[in-house]
Each structure stands twice: as C-alpha cells, then as structure tokens.
Length: 331
Image (cartoon, rainbow, N blue to C red; front, side, top):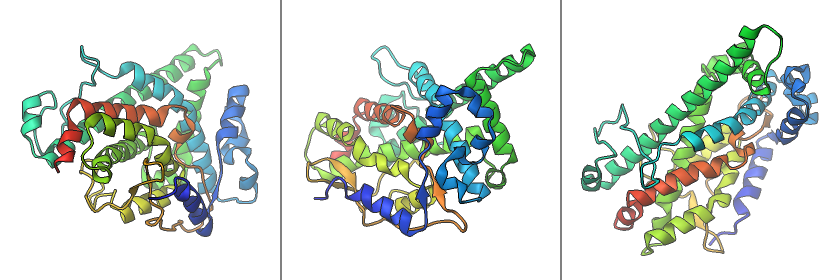
C-alpha cells in the first residue's frame, strides 16, 4: 500500500531537485477573464507577468507560459465542444470510428469481431479509435475558432471576441517562437498530442484496475477507476520532460511511443493507496530538465475544470460498453 500524497510531494520535489520551478497559470487566466485586453499585452508575451519569470529571461520558458495559458483559455471551448459533439448511439454509448491506420482492420461497431479478437488487439482498436474520434473533434474545435477569428477580421471594425483574440495571439506566438518552430508544433498538433497522452493514461488506469484488484466485477472496477482520478491528476502538473521520463521508467510508455498498446503486466506506475484507490508509485520518478529550462506550468488541461474528467468518462464508458474489464480479468 502507498500513501495517496506520496507521489505528488515526491514529484514536486524531483522537479525542484532538477532545477525546475512551477509557474501556475491560474492567475493569468483570472486576469484574462477580468480583462480580455490583457491578451494583447506585452506582459502576456513575457511569461504572463509572473514574478518567477522576471528573474529568468529564458525565451523558451516565457513562450511555454504564454502558449499554455492561451491553450488553457481555449480549452474551455474544447471541453464543451467535445461534450456536445460526442457521437452517441440510441443507448447513449459512444460511437467509435474505424481507426484509419490500424493494422487490425476491425470496425469497432462489429461487436462479434471485437469480442473474437485477442485482448491486445481489442485494446489496440479501442485505444486507436478513441484517439481518432477525439482528433476529429479537436479539428472541429480549431476550425470553429479560426472561422470566428476570420469573421471578425472580415468585419474590419476592430472588434474581436476574446476567443478569437486568444486564437490569433496563440497562432502568432507559435509562429514566432523558436521553441515551437524547432518542434514543428501548431495549435492542432499540440492539442492532439496532449489528447493522445491523456487517453493513453486513462486507458492505462482502466487496464491497471484488474491487475491491482483481481476477481472484482466490472461495476466495481468502473467505480474504482472513476474514484481514483484525483490520484492520477498530479501527472498533468508535470513538466513534459519529467512526464515522459516517468512514463518510460514505469512501463506506461511503449517503445514505439504510440498510445495503442495494452498496459504491460509488469508496469510499476499504478499501485493501491491506503484507502484502496489507484494511485501513482513515486519510485519510477526520474529527474530531468532540458538545458536552460527553469520553469514549467503543467498541462493546459489541468487548468480547465472538468476537462481531464471528461476524457476519463469517455474512456471508462467505452470500457464498460465493450466488456473490457471482463476480458482483462481473465488476462
């Protein structure tokens, strides 16, 4: 058994030991909500006017704060877009698309084929289809934002909505930032990559439940996973480097980096805490910081109320609908 707060405190300390200081963007988001004109301020471009950033002229760190703030601001719209556009069948269950690049060629709507498929194949199809579904919803969100921005530009009056302004500032920041240009990232690619990571971790939680508590029924596993979300959220507060290194060291991250693989039995990330909930094991934490990196914000989704829960709700409902827990229990 592990104590529920072990991971969060150990992770924060490991960041500090690596020379990294966390910059919360919550106050910047509050400033934008109170005064949307702050979106056009020079302060936003320089780390959001945060005190820790004043002593650190590192342009890459400042760009991270600006970009993650703008993404977090726009993710309110993404959360609502996903929730409202999620395709549901007459039973209220998520309708999954056929993953276009899946090597298995199985339509998730073909329940007989899904049931007959080996466990690792079924898990791969469900994970792949979930990512593909959300990719489409993310593309729709981005298209709506760009259309809104173009609408105000075409009016020529100088008026603009806060969302359109944030989209404009985000795009120009990404275009001007050496950090993001080196990586080839734009709004869509950042959001889709983060979405895949979140879906991968949510599926890993689902798949961990029967490993940690054998011989329970599906309803018990579903309840356990949903109640354990708060225990796993600290992962989203990490720097990207520390997150990736933790996932690699604990067995969550597969060698090919794709979010379509079943969680291995020998994973060391997920353990049970003293209350019997799934939590994260601090032992695989690996200190890491890029050269000159001094600040991190955590994932933008962490600052968007209900966003990470929405992704877990989607994954957990798919797991129940497809009988994943029953298959995992017999693994």
